[in-house]
Image (cartoon, rainbow over the protein chains, first blue to last red):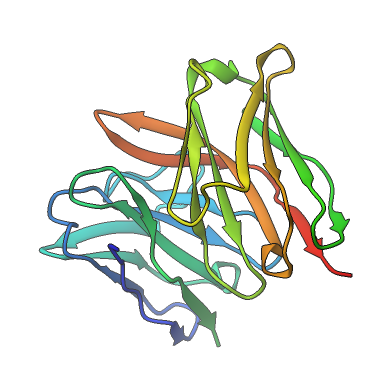
Length: 108
Length: 121
């Protein structure tokens, strides 16, 4: 079955730039989406269609793609950004939704 | 505002059934599909499938065919997830989310707050 691969964890200090990657063979054909999940809370959409930011999401969140990898960038990370981040996409035929394994962002 | 409110936590014995509800407000239920996602303790998000809220037709992901049933009651703007013959490994938080779809591309927003189902003897 199709898989999206994310690094298990990313750690950095406040003010630094976080880059969380997500790799998958079908990504050149399918959009990617990103969700933030804080402990004990439901996921929240932070990026859709690779680069679009929903209303209410801070401008420091951005998305990009290059080949089979998409990247969520958080510029000037803040303590409140500490959370798990999941990418989501579809297989090449768009018949199956898939989530990446998640990346735990720790702000030291 | 657009909101999905799920039913409360459930504690069930193995072999029992459970029905989780997801009530939509702030929009018309039948205008968007509804998805279900499982999150086992300490684990990631797992796609269970979705229900077409116009036709009532469900689509189940592999691994969720047989004991899992998606249904609707459009008169009360509510989607349901029923799980039968519960097993310990069904212990998880179950989320519903509104399915946004444009030209075959799908994303999910907003999400319900989640319902914890615990299966234990």
